[in-house]
Length: 265
Ligand code: THG
Image (cartoon, rainbow, N blue to C red):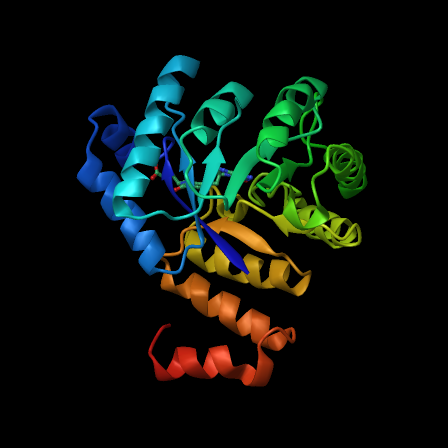
């Protein structure tokens, strides 16, 4: 499965400070660590709550930091389509992800012209709309179906659509895990790809890594295609490898055997 490294995010205290003080060494070190840990995409989120113009400047700088490490695929993470549009103009690789679009009409209208400029880019679609995140899986699946249709009509292939059924903390509502998994199962039937922000599930609980690892195994059982995670947590790679093996995605169990032999876990 595709691993999207989550560590460059302005909501994290040290990253926010690194962005504000233009600490290239810190950001580059965080990027390097994630690449070395097997991240296929680096998520860049420059949101530090200081407005659109500041976010544009900051994400441009983050992209500069990334390219000083290497030309790795990037996942542009912003709630603002203008920021996404601006950021994409600095992305050099064909392989890129837009994070994200959702069922809101205004958002769709703004994102569609951007997608047309980069028809081969991957796009993450959140199953929420003007009314927020539906509490039941059925409504999330309906939003996904509607946005997939719009994206298909705009020429986006299913293989480039990554639906995110939105993981919410089980500490807030114990049904949040199962509602996500049910929506994931249904969305897989549309033939698109899927993803999630895994660590939301454990928010507010102790020993979060443990919870994240078991939840990812359940997501893999339902066929999740990618996840936004911290790849530097070694437990998570062990969970991916073993869950993939146990669900028929590791031919001759080679990845597992290699993982054990090479002390990867
Ligand atoms: N779906 C999509 N994109 C997303 C999310 C999602 N992008 C943002 C987020 N959710 C996923 N990324 C992160 C990045 C960092 C952290 C969590 C998710 C993180 N959190 C610590 C915490 O929650 O305790 C912050 C602690 C700190 O300040 O360092 O590190 O769902 N498509």
